[in-house]
Image (tube, rainbow, N blue to C red; front, top):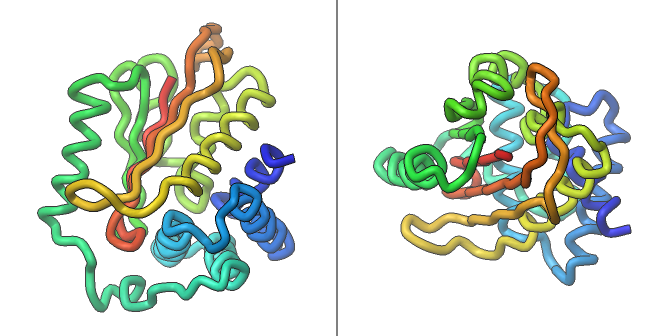
Length: 234
């Protein structure tokens, strides 16, 4: 039941066509964090609401606007309008570059993951960077970026999964890891989380070739949700 709730909760990242679907997704997310033993909306959720609102404003997405505002009401979380209106920025450009360099060092230069791509969200602007292995076997960064606008970013990897059940189970793990990430830590301070599939899963590359791999995700949020990185890979 918890896995199902977490999977439904992931619909908050979609540009859903009807307001009732946003209400359902927001409600299931509240049920999910409460079932995880959290009495109040976690910081990671509060910051993600800000991030989604910024994406909605930047991409002029009515669906994502409904998502962020519905979720804010459902969780009794005020949206930080000072950040959203860019009246002040909780992060300097120097700190942004430092966090970005940490992510690039781990997943591009030091090859902590295998074939992977990085989604960068900065003040509502979403950008994609993929390593050469991911682009060779799966999809180029340009192709992903072209279909990203007003679309759910977390599902970019799902089209390469063979088994829908594996996709659903990993989505559940991803949502729970994000909700349980805790308070900002480290230098510079950021909320960080990671998860991987329970075992090896079947994936299919862009040419239809089949492989067995472990799916992983790494997430980082900083500056009240103004800056975020999501890394997905096999």
